[in-house]
Length: 203
Image (cartoon, rainbow, N blue to C red; front, side, top):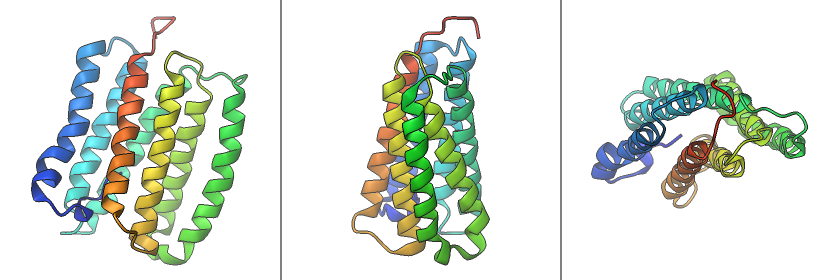
């Protein structure tokens, strides 16, 4: 999730930033033609992320846009979860390791955020749960490109963690650039790893 108000350059905010995710969606479509359910769900994740970026560009004007952006990114993560479940393999030991890490991290991080959330308590709690599930399902995949997708999922967790800390707890130096860089890397890796996917069935 990318916060527009942290990036002061209006050209970047209103033109370049949303174009990056949009271009990834176009690239995914051109390369795969969305020929199966997995590609369609990854495309949906990019689409909702693009909407989230647009909503968050206006979050400084009206707080409702932050909530709309949060919902859009929730839908993006849900799309990614359903995509990753297609190749879910319970015997993938990496999944159990990541599940343990995400459980510990989510509990500790929520404890850090809790005193500052106020009315955003439940939306942020739901978001932490969903993005954690997204990372865990990415780790339980067994398909071409799964390592790249998993790394992308981790970068997404890093991006949103930096974002939340900067917004609710304490301002971080160069927060905008850090959030932006990790977010773009996350989307790029998920898209590129997704393109490397080769379906063994006609799902």
